[in-house]
Image (cartoon, rainbow, N blue to C red; front, side, top):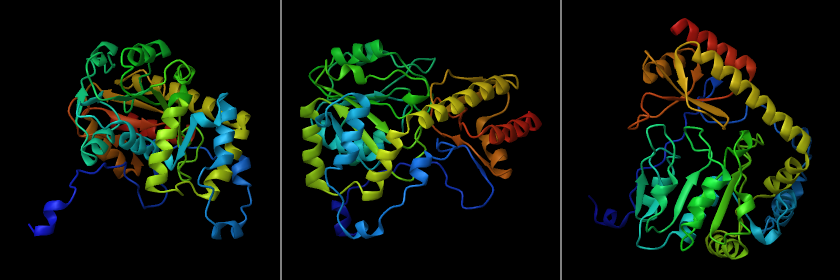
Length: 348
């Protein structure tokens, strides 16, 4: 090892879902929305001359649009480059004690990466045999808590009273609820942020708003929490949100009818697909996300995963304890899911 390597921050990086380069694939592995974003976004003509200027560091238009949409004040909103950026900033801002932070052992696999990278002590709390989070497991000394609701990769969601049970028992630390998939049938905890000044709720435009390529994430919380987040952001990079993202994000928020119709399409396809694969011997966890988490009673998940790739169908397999025999299957269009169903029927 070279002498300079002693001072390098070494981490095991997060591995995202495979991004195939070949044409004509069915991509059901990264939880993208199969439908286009709002026509208002699609038809927006951006003024290229504006791109020579720095964007508004406060992303004021987007912040104000989000505040109006959720019935909050602009001081309750923080925006970032996707929810990953928002959560990473939150880790840097709020998780700075010597006491371990807590998150589920079966959850979004970026949490332990951020904790390792930032040298934050943590404990992964085991979910139960049904892959559910137990609120009582989080009623102990800790340096902060984060969990998704609905959870990922399981898709299981919990009601607001469950979230409040955890938040109310941990008012000496910040509790972050990651609501990346809440629009597909979950129950949001936004109503609690006026009641608890230690709650931060994180959302994204990547899933339900069909804008993963634009990279918009945001957090909602008490004014003081948001101010602390902005202080860290402006010390790290003042211009995180680019001009096209601000403009297109506002247009997406304004098209509520399209947004709701899009979600209904995904949910309807999800429920139909779940029923069909259960006929083939699959067991699916109850999902309120834009994916299902499924295991087969006879075929190994890795085998299905590899055979599907040969047919240019990409799903997600996690080679991790407890979930190595499950597949996370993103909900695509009806046509895509029908092709996948025919593949599964032939394989079974």
